[in-house]
Amino acid sequence: MSNSVLTGQADVMRAINNTIAKLGNGHVDIGFMEGATYPATKEGDKPLPVAQVAFWNEFGTATSPPRPFFRRMIAAEQNHWAKDVTVLSSIHQGNGKKTLEAIGAKIERELQKSINDFVSPALSPNTRKKSAKAGFDKPLIDTGHMLNSITSEVHS
Image 1 (cartoon, rainbow, N blue to C red):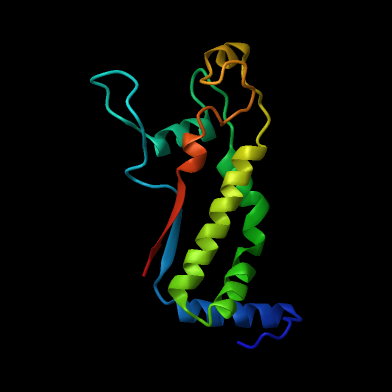
Image 2: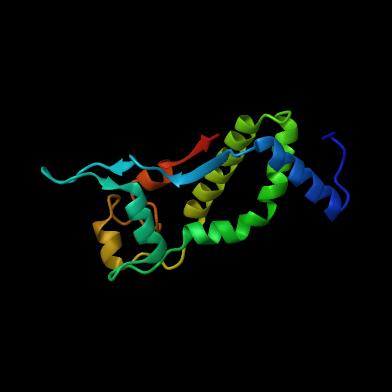
């Protein structure tokens, strides 16, 4: 694909299909990977998977409201991913692995931004008191461990 500007839907679809053909069967996983854990808080406890905590935050629990940071990010960002992959493929001269690594890193940043920007529903007064940072009032960010556990993995 040349560096020319894509002028219409047909051009964009052709570029996307060319990129898909170059990527082959590769894909990228983005989020909270197996093995990422919170350290055990008490002796004898098992480490808690970050993915489990993210799930509880995303969908809520009996004592905590849903805070759909992942779903909101997907809804806000997904419409440009196909074009992003096409542009990144051009930048990386059709190298599928580098293209997937680049889109994975981009979506990681979008997910981190979604967590950082999340404000509602606010933390309850009890949660603010129990927070690792007493008086801290930012949903989804207490220790920063979940935020810093977002990664991507390329599979080819």
